Length: 216
Length: 216
Image: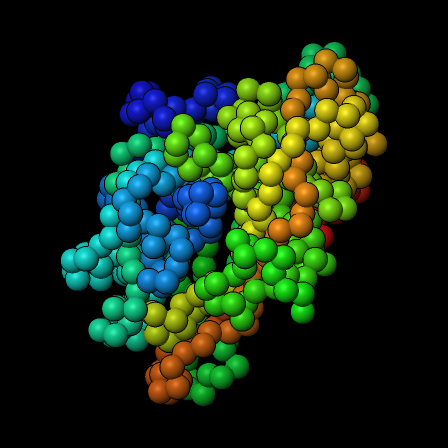
């Protein structure tokens, strides 16, 4: 198993749940629809949810140039990013041993603003495709004005750790004889049937990537 | 509609999505299984997912006394908390207008460590009941040693804002005639059938609060 790339990203609590395997980290980043970016604004730490997208070793963010989060990224000061997938409630016999099954990633980095038009275009394509694979080619493309009205920032994924819990509860040995049900309630972020825009006037049924939508 | 209680919690981006209504804020806090706490560790902002629970105007957190997040809360320095519920993918005709439906809360506060044994006990009951209502009474109760091995922190919910997006896409007027499907894919964190602990030896079927589990 790979070692932690830097001390600040080393998992210290429950290190047996940690992994520094890049494939695992990438799979968690790719499955999660949103991440939380932590940054300092006016001296106070803030965590803001936002959409991310991965291209190789780079994680992209986008938004309005007025966004506090993206303005903060201009400074190049370190940020961190957390991505969490909830997989289940772990219900132990003892309240103390209740837990959750999850897969999460913490990543540190110094963001940069993406100025190169080609990289910016590919980043915005990646954001659309991250959320809904297949959609970019069907969309009305970005205009030059929309490109100018969108800020894109990037961090390199070279300081990241994953933390994963799976499986059933871990109770104290004596508690297994208690007449209490214990186990796991699996959880999944699941899509429901698509709702066509009531303002739609053209005959365009939901494409397969909408009708059969699932996270990877 | 109530005004923002303080400037730092005022929603500046897309203020038409903002609300400072306490009932709405409470309903989002209560539905979300986890939150993200932002704090500064060794000069770097970090966002860490954790379970929260609300009792009246107080939000509680718990964990190991060794947790960096809870150790940070001992200092009493300001933290912020974000809670986000994803309700759907909003798929516009124009890539630029893609969005998500969500309900989120941002909260600022100066945490305190809960020392009073009664308050600590009630906070841990609230955490269990937040995740799985009905479970506390059925659980093997916390022991004194387990209580000592758990740190509980609290922030008062007096600086919080909600931000909500709902409904269909908002495309440019000219784009409504494009032959492109647009609409919403609703999303929900949904439970699957409970999995009984394979180490269970007693005859104890899943209780109704497990078999019929739904978020409020």
